Length: 360
Ligand code: SAH
Image (cartoon, rainbow, N blue to C red):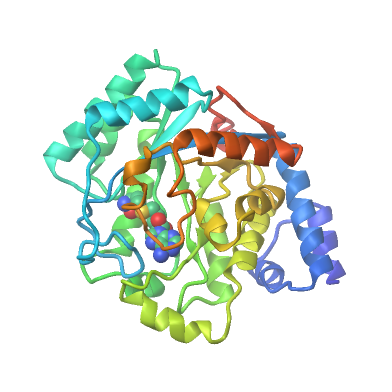
């Protein structure tokens, strides 16, 4: 057991890049147990003992982007594209509200046309009005202009998730076509922060070309950019994407993406303390109780799918996506059993804002 680093954590000392690399390299089961328990303890101390729910509505898979890892990329001809109607979206959102979810996430493929801007704007306003301002709204709609971000904020959205995907501009380049820019993505995060959103970001874990040192830099990126919420998860190979070939080649070395993702969650909690961290759905794609493992390793947010069943199989960013044959009612029951079954409390009817944001 690497005692010096553990006692450093116990004493609450600042962790260096070398420390983070050492923690990411841990593989002894007792060491991992220590790490997860420590992160869990810090979660209870800094963000409380409740798990917060964000009902996610994946309202369209139409996307102008062409990310090499993503199943709904523009160049994938093998999926049919959909866009939910306003009444469908409102219906799912209000269902989440009535079932105590406290807040929702509106996510979709990326579009930047005016029609889309106005469509989203009207949904935000309707949800705010139907819930009398009570339902929290997080957006996860990619890169937009400052004016668009501002307009959606003014209409009532208060949190925004935009993953940086990797903090290495070199890796970013290898994961995206030439017209997708790391600098733009980073600038968007800054704009969101300036406007006043609670800002969430995250990375893909276990990518081709990615080393443990890169993951340590990802953690430092969160810290340096004063991020309020983290949503990161394992990269899962989608066969119908350009990155699959390289990733399968790498997989001969057998990266354990689930464990690496759990370590990232735990170390992020130890490093950042009072931020919200999601146990993302991709964890569950790798293991049936992946999300519960995430909660035990320091995460405090879960994003149950509240999208109506008929669209679920069309929103597969990665294969093996869990719960696509289920309805939101099944998901609600199942999650409650799972989370409460672990002895955890659920923060029903609460926004569950990031304490990091609130104390700024
Ligand atoms: N279009 C929006 C949101 C949808 S994509 C945006 O770009 O922000 C949401 C996230 O899914 C992405 O940020 C990416 O990190 C993740 N994702 C995409 N493909 C994935 C894959 N193959 N494995 C795991 N996560 C993936």
